[in-house]
Image 1 (cartoon, rainbow, N blue to C red):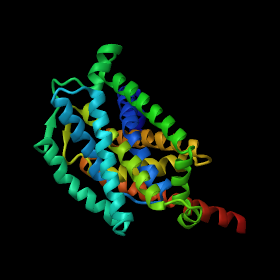
Image 2 (image 1 turned 90 degrees about the vertical axis):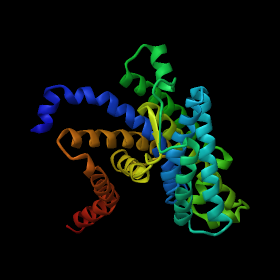
Image 3 (image 1 turned 45 degrees about the horizontal axis):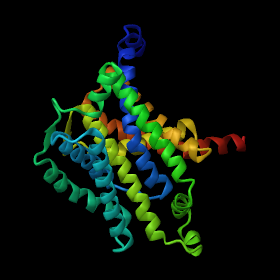
Image 4 (image 1 turned 135 degrees about the vertical axis):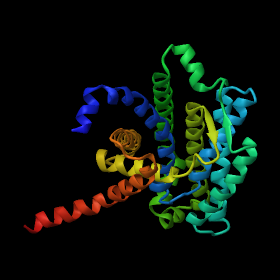
Length: 305
């Protein structure tokens, strides 16, 4: 009944465009999580550090007078370096992938503070991607965020589709599927793992740079819970929209990110305390992860009957 009231008074319609816009910005991060979680079959916690790293790098350059394009490019390079460090810790030093990601994440907290010089860096009065696009397109803030987010997501999605169709991209996918098989073909799996982590964290850092510009500030703690949000987007997308092909998987992840943001907006609008959002997200991800098992059990019972 409360949802009906929300729709009737139009407040949810007012929330829809900015909610979808935020979903598109975070979809870039979700695609990065997909690369490690599904393609490489690695749970990479580096994203908790590389997300604010991208925000810190972009915000620092913007505050110093550099253009938005240079700021986003710097964020991508910083994310690449973070991914390479995790990859080296895992492949060369034989540290388990989960622990390697945690070590890099912890180290990046200090790095991010060094880059920004303080815990929070405001972008008030600074030209960002969104302020420039707003001036050019003549749209309001929410519409501008939607357009920029859509453009970024489409461009990155097309790049990923092309890249994973190349020889090196196929080798990265094969590494996550069966390392022994691809190693028998003469491929150095250490290199493909490092490249996968490099690409993943570059995307996460780009997302951090865009979100920081959209919010108007970069904060050293803005990466907290990023991995859970990314996993939620991936799992929700796969459960709702399927995984028939690699192209379908990427579209599912993007739509999953949007659905996740809509769900969060709905529960907040219905009165859920913001402090409970992390708990709600964890329960949502756990439920989504268990959906395939529940489906199999239901199918098995129907077959027995």
